[in-house]
Image (cartoon, rainbow, N blue to C red; front, side, top):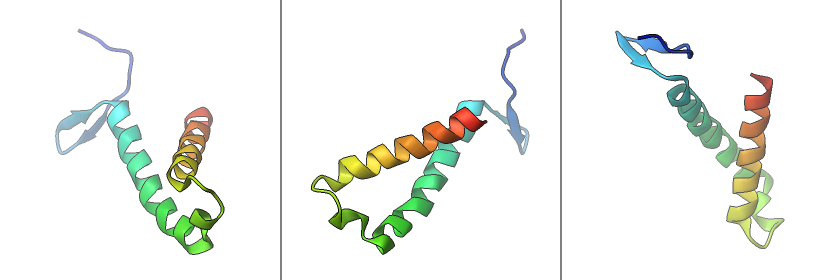
Length: 67
């Protein structure tokens, strides 16, 4: 049986592209979180969690469009 997506092989284990995207998203969140804390992002918005989530979605959406 064939499939249309290219998988990533790590140690003989096949990972579908969405696993790679999920790990990339997690890495981006881990990198952005300290930066947002450093620049005082929480002080700019009344609902900080919604603002952070919106920023994460915009960054990940931009990366998906570029790839």
